[in-house]
Image 1 (tube, rainbow, N blue to C red):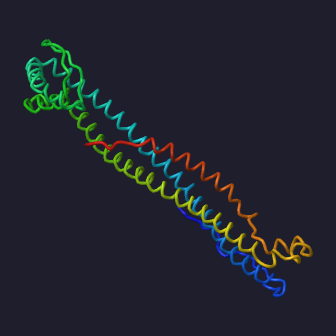
Image 2: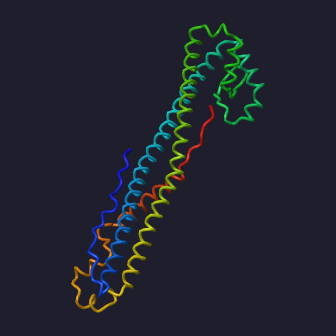
Length: 271
């Protein structure tokens, strides 16, 4: 990302002359505050453009975390299907089915405690069960001879593949979530900085114009009666090129987008 800054100190100074009328003092103040005002405007432009860039990055970070989350859901469904297929094979082997019933029955308390335990519904001749993935693997560990059978091995390999994909995806997901939440927090700071710079611009404009208006030249008859419109403009602050209202509207839109993202946080996963 390239951060292009607006040019600073581009103020065109007017000649500081007119000692008797007091115009020199008014010109001095105008030049001084015009420089400050131009710099304040450049700071606003820089910060709001930066906020726009960060808004794009925030959206991309959110979409990345959301995409990985969807991928995890798909992997979990595929893993569930693989364990269900393993459960169907186990139920066809009387020795394994009996052991599966016993192992699952013993683990019922653990299932009740851990509501997040992954389970599949299993029909056996002993009755219907909510079988945990962990229970299935315990049974298979007790009977390694079955793992060498092609039908079992194919599914076991599929399960191992899905478990690995899930671990990797969850690591990637947690990293993406952390990056998104970090950017979200920093984004709020960037917006506040932009608002502070807009406030500083208005304060500089108000203070500068007041000091210029209080000069002897601005209050005198020469300025009011004899000065041309061009001469009058020369000792007043020029805000025409700044377009501050436009940037304030842009900042408001960005802030509204931020409020939408603040309610769309993620919860990191264990793995």
